[in-house]
Image 1 (spheres, rainbow, N blue to C red):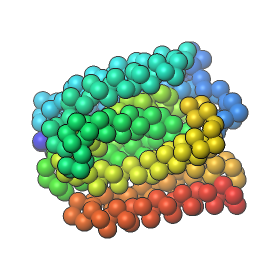
Image 2 (cartoon, helix red, strand yellow; image 1 turned 120 degrees about the horizontal axis):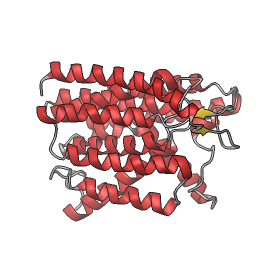
Image 3 (cartoon, rainbow, N blue to C red; image 1 turned 120 degrees about the vertical axis):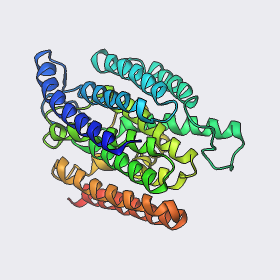
Length: 329
């Protein structure tokens, strides 16, 4: 992969994402495509929703520009599948789709995406080949869903996407075995960075399902690509905060028999707003933890055990700080 070309594409994607998101904000407002506050919302006024149209289209353009310069096999299949998910999610943003239909569509996308994964074992021989693929499918589907669930306050998903994208690029480059993954991940981070300018608190536009669902799908594929190349520990470390917050919250709701499929305000990051409603303060805490996880993902290339232990401690401390903020401000 020509890194000069990758840099040019990433800069172009950042600029395009920034400009298109700003333009889209006006178009969405003019057409009254707004996220109106409800009881479970974390915002107080209507905000345009649908910035994912800009983020995913510029990301897709960047991936296509890299496709003829050494992009991994299967990247175009995954990108086309993500585009279909974006269209369905845009329909969901506008008029709503049944939960079962959405979940079925996401599951079908994952099944298609599995064909675009390399032949390497995701779980490194701990499971039979059939179980390895089945477990990868379940994990990927959960990642798509949680990426949507976790997009609940200003800046959080943009920050998470930037951290995972940069982390993937650094790990793949350090390992020297997945330059195509590194380039695609860097472009994803660039698209999210352009969007962040408009989504930082107070947000002027929201991502919407049209952005969060395909982003979760694409990043999930890149993480599984890394794992299939033997880099399973960094692939686990990078998204560990999102995995922990979403999974623990779901387990709590299931344990008390709450309707876990419904939207709510019970995630750690959502409860952390209770003291003062300062989205930026909460997102900055998560940003610091994400930076630490990127560093630990790099450590995990050579020392997976210690890195995983430190990553678990980092996420536990983050959840403690969010919970403490929820209780005491």
